[in-house]
Image (cartoon, rainbow, N blue to C red; front, side, top):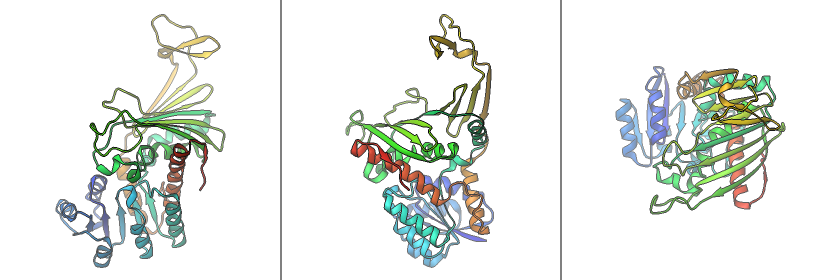
Amino acid sequence: MKKLALIGCGGIGAYHLEHFMRFTDLSLAGFCDVTVERAEGFVKKAGQGRAFSDYVEMYDKVKPDLVFICVPPACHGNIEFETIKRGIPFFVEKPIALDLDLAGEMAAQVEKHKIIAASGFQCRYDNINDAAKKYIAAGKVLTVQASRVGGIPEVPWWRNKFTSGGQLVEQTIHQMDMLRYLLGTEPDTVYSVAGRGWISQKECPGYYTDDLSTTLITFKNGVTATMMTGCYAKNGVCWESKMIFGARDSRMDYVLCGSVTVYTQGAKTAAKKGKSASVIKGDGVRDKDSEEHVEVTKSEVDFGLLCDRTFVDAAISGNAGKIRSPYGDAYKSVAFTLACNRSMETGLPVKVVY
């Protein structure tokens, strides 16, 4: 039975622990957190293992066969280098780093030492992606309109862009990653603008990050996209978070971890009084309720569980072929979002360079 260790006993660590407790071929040997009481809480919940506040000590005493690293974005680096040095397969939560040079060096070391490593882009394991890829492969997607809007997570480190990277890097990276994954191409240039001032210190003490940002993306295959993201929302009615893939004769609505809806065979062009409509040709309009063909695919799998199980199987077998977000690829999604941050800082378009 392989020994698993977990570093970082916060919310995302608890998410993974729920999965580990369903795996019967693992020994949950060690839990580490800078606040040892939290690690002790994980030991109690798991009913096994030992608690540590020092990951090096845990490595020395537990000698794990695989590790999950679930620490805040600004805490990456030393943990990974020590893990790589010991040759331990590891799974790390996104983003893998907030510094592009650091991320690149870690990715290079993973490749050099042939370490099995993956990152937490769980959305790649959703069953809706088959329908989405089928649509993209069959048609000619010209553009994508994407958004993610929510509130402010409760953890203090998230409220400061210096320690979280901002919403685009820490949360919306899931959508940015899925753009790369679904379109099957890489971003070329990004131009991002950010807005602040709607969320006050009185409302959210310690808040020093963007309330929202909008990014124009050009991909190497000619597709253009916009991504709007914000954490200003007080409730769920302010904005619909999804990605709309547009072709000349159809469109696909992609709701992350929710559903894929494909609209094809354009509808009638006559406007109806009292109906909402949109232009399709010249000054002609179509009734949104008269779509002729709609295909809906809903998320029906526990994609987070699948993601964790896939990595565990890879670490046990030594075969990483089924991992959908290997560490080197996760580095590219981080580089993508960090380029957006650089554009916000400079006010200029930025080339995405790996």
